[in-house]
Length: 342
Image (cartoon, rainbow, N blue to C red; front, top):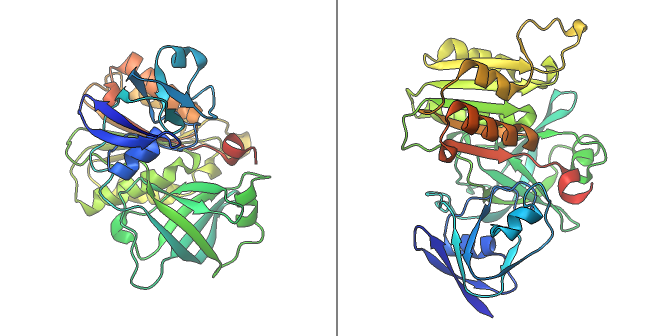
């Protein structure tokens, strides 16, 4: 059975079958609802059901609690309609700009960036190009039907190869292969681009970029895009890790500091050991931002990394630093264990 979905406040409408999710139907219709993992784990697609009934598939409580569901909140990536629906969500302009493709790719390079982070460079077929926005991600389609998502670590204009930063999660179905049996010239199939985490180019507000761990990958793509645009916006990059080796492209960030006029780089380490001889900032990365920016009311924040970092940042920046909630753009990195148990 087909139901009608109406989005407020835009008034956009699209059809949704009873056996598909609202997000899938929206993407098919070119309606830019916000989303991230598409697996009920990150909460990026959460919105309010104003009228109608939905049924939720499997999802994590941290993404949508029972209390929130009772209050009419919904995760559109796992909500299926039981009637016509009116929902409240902020549409993302430009999220449907480029077509989603399924493509084969060949591994052109595997390079260890640190003990537990691998760079994968993908070569696309001749005369094929993946159009995407800096900050978006692709999904690898594995042989067992599972999928794994990784953000592109290079800006779209540097698209001769697509680069990804993959952290090893011991026991992970995909990452164990990356760090053991995977080799150059192997073929990987993927689908993309996905996601609504990308630069809002219509703004000239100062930007705070927050990355934790391999959340640096899409932040790097954003930086490369800003450089290509010759942007004069003020940019402060805060990159957090447990120990200095977690900042696996520290030298690149230092190069940006010396070559870009309106750029600042602040590395933050939370668990340095004496042997690290770390002389920089310590503690949690989002708290370093709060210490430096008591007033974020005129800024935009782009945050990417572990969900606890992203969630804490949004909560505290809005509550303590007057950041408008709509100026916080985020992509939470959900681990294989969180999504699939392995």
